[in-house]
Image 1 (spheres, rainbow, N blue to C red):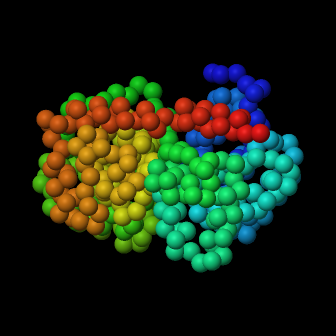
Image 2 (tube, one colour):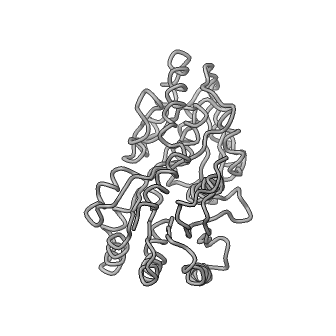
Image 3 (cartoon, helix red, strand yellow):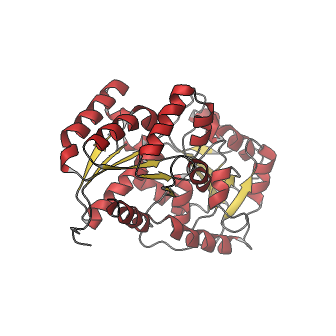
Length: 347
């Protein structure tokens, strides 16, 4: 346990915190809470401001409470750090940057997920202007994927990579035995490739064991509907339960249509589990084909079925070890220390 360091600036952090039902916690919430845990461990004086709309009656109350807390406390803190999605950048960040600069405070931005370039390119004139204002006036700007860093450096040269991160659970190790136990842990909706997964499961032989976990976002995904596809639905999980289910499995499968760096892939690596995922640009940055997992085309059931069969007793142990080693780049505490060093260097 590190003691409190006086050299660290006092930081106000705005981001989504846990709601009462943690089984529905999204990846951005888990990620922000991980940052807060790191700051507590490092003894950094900080104030979290909750921007999770699920903790309020609606968007209007969320905005009101966030801005009230921010303006009431801004004088007591040296630095303001906004951690958010595209909506945070468009609705909250312009006000945060304007008032922070008015009070002489430095500001950092950390954008979750991986499609912000598409949001900018497809946005209208007002949305684009807001995004440019936010990015150009931040002292530090962080993105989850390397391609977004490259894309948005044109607005701010102080733009850096801050990947999706986790802490490695204690007592875990790579796995050597392979029993064809696959697990899907994510929201149940078409965008996550849930339907393609079900279609693929129907074509697997009986030696495969595939279990599906996660909150249901589209009504058709009932336990009865899922059972028709040679697999089973076992309900949503709390963040603490996720790791235990990953440890029980051999491989994580996530056939998404759109992703940044999926937190569940990082968690799979943390316990030495290789992954069967789609070859989206962001995912291809972190999953090495044939080494830490298998990459397949999105929305392609044939490719997904072939992907299941590419894991076997001969290659599994090496892939598990590679996945375990790959986690080092996504260990939360070193990334948080790097963030603090950069914040402390701001004048």
